[in-house]
Image (cartoon, rainbow, N blue to C red; front, side, top):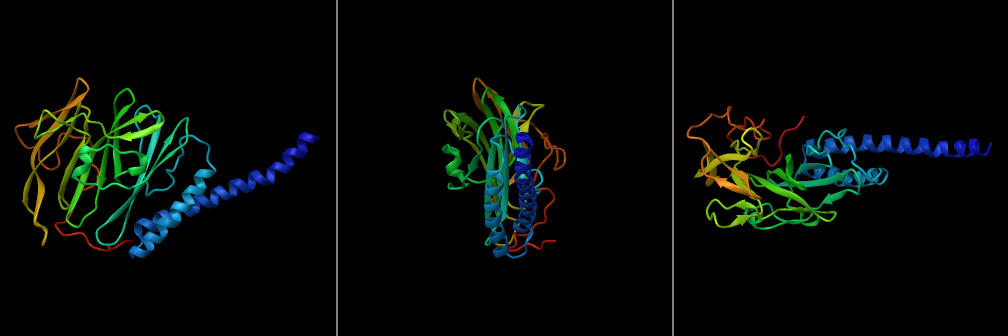
Amino acid sequence: MKVYLIFILCLPFSLFSQDMNVDLKSDLMFYGDVMTSAELPANRQRASKVFDQLLESYLEEMPPSIVDLSFIKQLTKTVPEDSLFAIYTWQVELDNYNFEYQGYVFFNDKPYQKLVTRSPFDRSMKYASHSTQDWYGALYYNIVKYADGEYLLFGYNANGEFNNAKVADVLSFDGDQIVLGKEIFQDPEDTLTYNNKIYLSYSEDASVNLNYNPGLEMIVHDHLIQRIGRMPGQGPTNLPDGTYEGYAYVDGKWMYNKKLFDHSYGNDNAPRPKPVLNTNRKLKPKKKTRSRR
């Protein structure tokens, strides 16, 4: 009789908890859509703040394991082949050609870690390592395990009116803490030194690829040359010339290869995995507020 009484008393709380999660999921889907598709920057920013608060509330109800946020379509999910963790990142377009980046890392057997943007996404990041508390902000589009406890992480950043940027990083662990960056990428200009990351800056209207090619077992990216930009007011920028360079993993280092091929494969036949972002784009500068549906 006591068992039945306990069950009856707990049942309303269980139903209430389920209803609360359903409401939270519905609100997260709504504000996730508004923060990425609203026409006015102020509305996107306001929705982003509400989304953050709702997500924190939702995560408090979840067990300390990998959380499935795939019901929020505006988030990008990357998972390594060993499935030990999952990374969710997203971007919110602010005013004046700037984007805000946020993210979380969820684990199978320990609490999640939030990615807090406090470092710039620029050339200086090549020489630095980062933690989750001084993240540089990126939309991650691929992750590849290449050694025990070490992963290649590929990200994109759209900040700036005329240029975009991409990064190839290393994700590893110091105890339970995430470390981003490792001094193992041979410097193309000084082959006796090594950088923590690969950083590429290029024209906003160009399609530039930076990814791991499993067939070649190499990091491959477009070779960039400086040219006058094709958009009014742009000035000098970096554009792909149709050739490729890359990095091969040798004795614990990613060694630089200046030229992988002697000819161009064309825009649609590059030796790379399926491209993400930056597909067919018109030759025009970014708008302060883009039309949205």
